[in-house]
Amino acid sequence: MIYVVEDDGAIRNLLTYALTEKGYEVKSFENGLAIVDEIRENPCELLLLDLMLPGKDGVSILKELRKFSDIPVIILTAKNDEFDKVTGLESGADDYITKPFSILELLSRVKAILRRVNKVDEDHLTYKNISLNIKERTVKVDGKNLDLTFKEFEMLYLFMNNIGNVITRENFLTKIWGYDYQGETRTVDVHIASLRSKLQDSGSYISTVRNLGYKFGEI
Image (cartoon, rainbow, N blue to C red; front, side, top):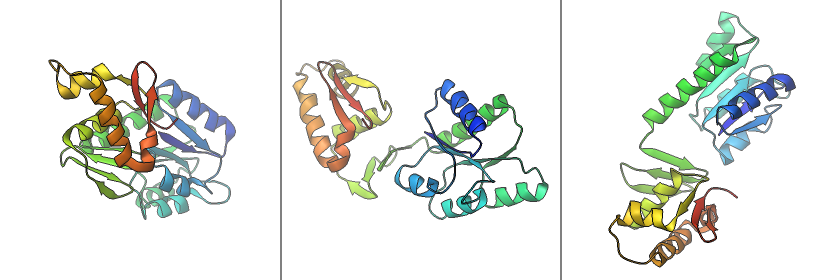
């Protein structure tokens, strides 16, 4: 998910369209008054942030954001003085693009930052309030450790790598139990029920797709 904070409607719509066309999920905001709270509750992968915003300016938002989050931020602004650029970068921005800008250049920088972040954090998956560490084989929900069995962990890992996609019972059996497993698909349902129970409220992210299997993600 990419958040765009831009008060100019034309630019905001252009960014949303261009990013969506490239396959990114996008949520846009016309001012920065609610963005900090939004990121606290629903962290994004990348923030595109204008500096000159009504209500609260971009640098103030960035400084507040850096008190609790290290999500990558690209500043978009008409301010092209070296002082403004240094101020933005020293406040915690990862990149700085001045207006007017090339959409192709912006998309290239977005791709580069996300590639860098994902490469650094390839052993760590997050969705909403769920955090999964592949290397340590640990899962946290709202910051609290969750005790999962081996197969429950593997199922959650498969879900978090396929957010929004249907995973059939047969897929689960092949990928987790092994292609030569001779048991019934009912065992998948039993493990899903247990995983849902352990995830408590977050178990609602797992939805049943009738006659097919399951899907992970907010409905």
